[in-house]
Length: 288
Image 1 (tube, rainbow, N blue to C red):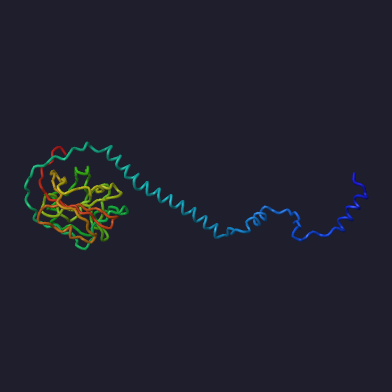
Image 2 (image 1 turned 180 degrees about the vertical axis):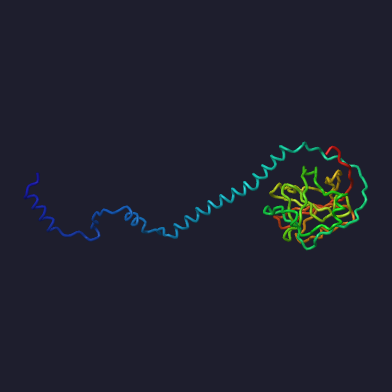
């Protein structure tokens, strides 16, 4: 046990001992809160402010918005196309190969069909929808109804070279722009009729909404194009293919002989791919 004399000796020694240098002094132990300890430990770094918190929230919101937009694109694009293809396959009759038609001479039409010259070529963007027929800007003349009674509008397009077999619906000019049919080829109202002298113009999507003309660029001169109208099947043969600007509407001009013009988007939708063909024959349809 430590005696009192020893304690007094130690105390006297400590009192008389010289002080150590200041650099050797030890800091007294202090109890600090967790926040204070974190603040001192991170004193050499920039602390997060309210701006950082808002930026973090904005990043989360942006990520959620991007996922929602991507999900909508998937559902409204590839999934919708896949669902439509399943429904068509389930209810469609067996597709027969297009026969090689015999040539039949038909009398020329007496009425010239005219379309507005200041309307750009059809766009094939997914946001366009078909509108009711009563909204088109190029009304039919009374004579056209008689003409179409003898020469029906096209209702089916077949291109064996690219495996295309699609319905055809009539489209019109709405708000200064051509409609583009969904899951079908669109017959441009006012252009030529199948088999008659004139320029039969059909347009279609190259991306979504069926993308009936996605493989149009694979065609080559000499490929056959079949168009059904009424009880007749008309055979056209590709003569020329080229890219034009949307304002090059002269490709829709009437022609003295029966021709067909197919139109779709190309080059990132800034140009239009044009396929031109000439009538080479026609034959009556049987069993359809």
